[in-house]
Length: 228
Figure 1 (cartoon, rainbow, N blue to C red):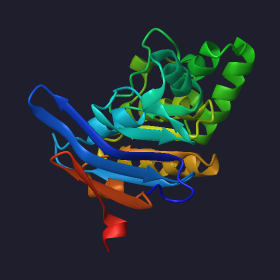
Figure 2: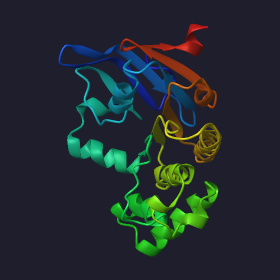
Figure 3: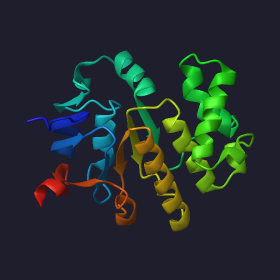
């Protein structure tokens, strides 16, 4: 049964790579504005679950429903359009475009959506101010610290005002101090924008920023709040 008011729901997800089961009847749900941490050891299926939820990877079985739409029934072009307009992404190593300045990186999703450069970069700078990195706008990613680069990546993820942000080990390449700052700013900015956050992590200090935890082990998921 779909949890009432859920924005993104997965049921019965199965995914195998050869003979290895990455997901085995996994389930997930998240409400608008909620931060849910997906936890588990390496190889447990956390990232595969995130990729299925975001429509990047198609499950072998099961369904993913976003805002009433069955993602597993959509074509590649429809899923790509949804990821550009409704979803934001933060990865462990930022994945910024090295040839672009930081403000151009943040503005990139808007430019791809057809927004004029001046307007896109003005909006980008506004988000960079929220993430406390407006002073590195003219620099390229290779000229900023890891913590600054990751905050630029968070600004890029939020610039289109997505309804869901997928963060895959967003602090994994950072020291504890920068990791805490990134998580504080990410969750504050996402909640202010009423965006839900799917946070994949194996660190309890990072999961502490979430409203709820889901543990994935051997491809199966367990909602810790509902289990209490």
